[in-house]
Image (cartoon, rainbow, N blue to C red; front, side, top):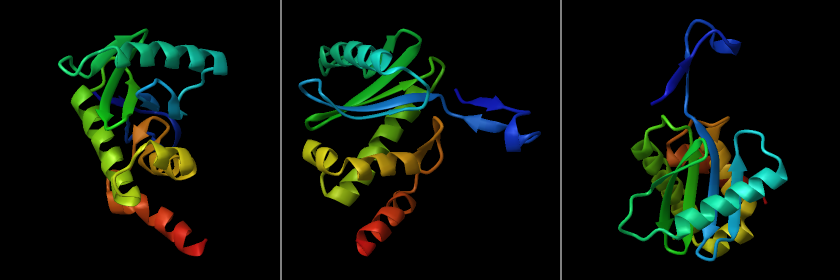
Length: 161
């Protein structure tokens, strides 16, 4: 469920809808992190420990099990596409199906840009993958869902270079 916050910052009186995305990880089948984006502060040691625990837990599950796991104070929503696992840590009261839809949108957007995204695309174009994610999510909130709007700045950067 989305939270409505009021009385803070520029949205005073209007209420600001805030999605509780805490982090996004892309991990290969061997458990190596290829992309990590955090929307809350964790030290490097805390990140390493959290990623290790979550990756072991998610990769150990089989395809017949659901794509939601509770870990510490997070709900982990994940999905496997080819050789990559997309893991999103959210607040416990977040809508799992909405986050699965977000993961699918992220993959479709990367597919449109890279042409069937794979692990090597992420490794060799990490800055573009981060840029796409930053266009979609700001401060843990999903702010853009249009693939065209997400990819237009990247295409403009490609033209100028």
